[in-house]
Structures are given as C-alpha cells and as structure tokens.
Amino acid sequence: MSADAPDIRAEARQVRQAGAGTRAIPAERSGKGRGPARKDADSARVEGRVSPWQATALRVGAGIVLLAIWQVGAELFAPSYIATPIGAIGAIPGVLGDSSFWSSTGATLLAIVEGLAIAVVAGTIIGLAMGRLPDLNRILGMYVGAFYAIPLIAIVPLITVWFGYTPQARLAMIVLEAVLPIIYNVAEGSRQVSSVYLDVTRIHHVPWWRVWGGVVFPNATPYVLAGIDLALGRAVIGAVVAEYVTAINGLGYYIIFNVRSFPENQGVVALVVIVLFALAVRALVNLTVARVMPWYRPAKEA
Amino acid sequence: MTATTQTEPKIRVDHLVKQYGGRVVLNDVSFDVRPGEIVSIVGPSGCGKTTLLRCVVGLMRPTEGTVYISGKPVSEPPEGVAMVFQHFGLFPWKTVSANIAYGLTAQGISRKEAAPRVSELVRLVGLEGFEKSYPYQLSGGMQQRAGLARALAVSPGVLVMDEPFAALDAQTRDVLQLELLRIWQGLDAAMLFVTHSIDEAVLMGDRVVILRGSPSTIFDIVDVGIPGPRTRAVVDSDRFRSARDYVWSAVMQDELAALAKPAASQTASLSPEAPTQH
Image (tube, rainbow over all chains, first blue to last red; front, top):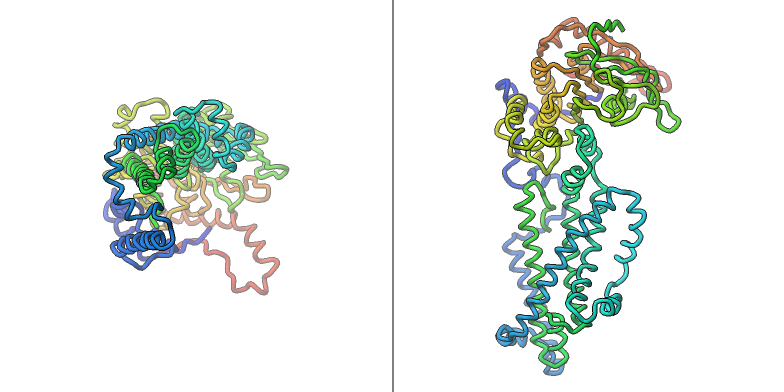
C-alpha cells in the first residue's frame, strides 16, 4: 500500500474542519476568480516584470515608433503619393464621408460573418464526426490535410469559374478558408475525450447523439475556439482575396481600387477597418465564451 | 468461502477469465455479492482489480466465464448499476447539481423533475451551498462527494467503486470512508469496493476478496465479521486488527518474497512499506 506523503498543514486544516461536525466538509473553495490560485504558483511560465499599466504604455509607444519610422522613411525616400500614417489620418474624414466606402465595408463584413457562421456550424459537425468515427477520419483526413496545406488563393480562379464574379464566389472562398482549421481542430479535440467520461455515459446508457452533444463537444471547446480564431484570420483573407480577383463590391476591392488609382491613404484606412473588425470579432467570441461557458478557463493571457 | 445463498446474489462472478493479447490477467475468479453487502476487492497493484470491476459493470467483456447481475448475464452495462471513479469523472462543464442529475437526465428525466432528488443527494453527501459550483472550484474530496451523489441518484441496486478515495489525501479519505459507511446504512444495494489499501478494504468490506498471483486468482475471501454500523472505533478492535493483519500478509507475501530474495544483502536498509498508516 502506498504511503501518502502528507502535506501536514493543509491536511491538519482539513481535518479540523471536517471534525467540526458530521456535515462539515473541507471548505477548500479556491477563490471566486477563475481558476485555482494554486495553479498560478505551479506554473513555470516566464512572467514579465512590467505592470499592466506599463505594458499598455510600452505597447502604444512601440506602435508610435513603428509609425514614425514609416512616416520618416516615406518622406525621405518615397515618392509623394506613397501612403503615410499622417496622410492616412488625414484621409479618414474623406473616407467616412464616402458612401461607397460604407457599402463596401457592409458587404465584406457581412460576408465574413455569414461565411464564418456557416464554417463554424459545418466545421464543428464534420470535425466531431471525424474525431469520433475513425473510419470517416481515414477517408476524409487526407483531404482535409491536403486542402489545409495548399494556399487556397490558388483556387480563386476556379471558384470564379464555378460561381462567376459574384458575391457567392466570395462567400464560397470565405467558407472554404474558414472551415478547414475548424474541422481540423474539432476533430483533434473530439479524439481527446477522457475515457472516464465515456465510461460514465456508457454506465448511464446515454444515447450516442447525447454523448456527442453533451460530452464530446464541450470537451472539445478549447479546440473549437482555437479553430475559430484561425478561421477568422483566414476568412478575412478569403474575402479580401476574392474581392481583389473578382472586383465585386467590398473592402478588398475598395483597397485595390484606391491604391491603384493613387489615393493610397484611403486604402490604408480601409485596411485599418479590417484589422479593427477582426479584433472586434475576437473580443466578441471571448466575451460570449465567458458568458455562456463560465466553466471554461482559458490559459492566462500572455 | 462459505457463501450460503439464501437470497439470490446481486452480483455473481462465475469462473471469470480475462486475457489481454495472449496474457492471462485474471484466472478463474468466482464470488458473489448479496444484497446489502459490501465486498472489497484488494490485491497488489496491477493485479487486475480494475479489469475485474470493468467486467462486472459490463464496460468490458470477460474472455471466459460470466458475470450475473440480479441473475441476468452481463454483456453491456446493465440497468441499476452505478459506478464511482477514482478520478471522479465529473464533467467540468456541468455544475455540481447538473453532474449529480446526469444519470437521471440521461434517462430522459428533465432537470426540473430531477431537482428534488438532486437536492436530497446534495444534502446526503454534504454539498449544500455548492450546487451551482463547477468541479474546478471544489477540492478533491468534495468532487468525489459529487461523484458519489451522481452514482446514488439513480438508486442503483449495485454500486461499484473503483478506488474511489485513492486520489485523495489521507485525512479526506478517512472522512469519506466513514461518510460512505454512514450513507450506506440507509441504502439497500450491493457494493463492490475495489481498493489497493488493505485498511480500507477491511474497514469497508463485510467480506474481502484477496487477489494474488500472476495471473491473478482469488487467494481467499475473508469474512471480516464486524457487524454494522461501523464507526471510527472499529479500527481499534481486535477483530479489525486480526483481519487486517491476515489480509496484509496474504497480499504482501509475494512482494515481500520478491523483495527479500535477490538483493537481501545490499538493500537491508530498504524496509518494506509500513503495513499501517499512523
């Protein structure tokens, strides 16, 4: 029999509490925050030394330095029509007053949201199935891997042939880009189900669809979220690239049209809008997770 | 073994053999558990205790022999059997009360209908105030209380415990052993209790099945003969001590022999593990 190596202090505390009454329980509830404090002490992560406030200041400072290099470099070495940070800031009022900018923004962002939604639902279902059905994985795994490896930009010409120069081509491109990382990650996460959970479901005669929905899927949550994170970036790429090629109304087209006809600063503003949108979607996903899945404890931010 | 069966046994293990690949792990294991009885299974680590248990609950098929639960041969997990796991097996995405309700909701009972039963069990295992907590917010001992409550929620006729307290610290384990014995008073089920702790096997079990050898077979079945309700005081009784000493020497015989033989001279200072905890 294995001798226990007792942590005398902790146990003495527990015993005292447990002995206080028949119902007493070791009230070792670890704080109200997310995650036990103990975990932080154990983790061997390299911790930065600056406070959050200082970190923000440094972050902003680094951005200003980069922009300054760009500004000075462009003024010293580049022709005058090249975009600069100050030029872009100056272009903002004009861009915001431009109705074609707003219709482009609306078209692209809606397409990304729509494509992402389709990709998340389809990718999760396909990923779950591939993760739980080894035979299906054997059949499809190679193709998912192959598509994941190639630059999908190469497919855009094909897609334009199938769908024409239409918003549907853009949507197809977004879905194709976004669905792959989700399938890939969800399949991986669905394979990693602890056998104890599956034992519990078998003991209680849980039907397979409830095992998938109630155990395999929540168990794969970290993977689903990682997949969505990757998918978001790829969806934006898909949308912009499709617009470059097909010249349908959207931010990608807005950028390429402006840059090629010399109001380059306007193009930069559109670029910033895309970046802000991606950050906003990410924040929204994190917020939703925190609300809907209070049990989920993401790794601490770096 | 003098199991005169006036009543039909809840669990009957009949000449069970389990092989992995070509290797026989369990050989010719037979015993039964009567209603209201706790039978402990003890043996050195790796002797196939958990394998035996998984065969009993139908999570695994024996190579030969049959397990009967309430007279019916087992091939899939049967109705009326619940299990408590060493590492609790609580779903981290469910609250304590949702975890406890799991066996009921799995049967299609709504959370609302299950609520009275769940709060009854929360009280029984002493988790009041933690119904809405998530497992990560609880200590190991409290998580296993929830694991026990989930198993009891379905009012099982057979309760199977797979080293339920092995992942807990010594003091929490002591508390939970006595808690389980207290809860057991009010139940009418058969319990199969697998443990590697000899003290625990004797404290919990009306009878103790000792597995030994390679492949493992039943070395003996000890009638502990301490009438319930058992309390902490039991461990100081002569009856407990003699049963424990007997089980200890039976389980440890092989290990001690192995330890003593090859390297007796150079490992004189390496004493075998102490039989009891202090």
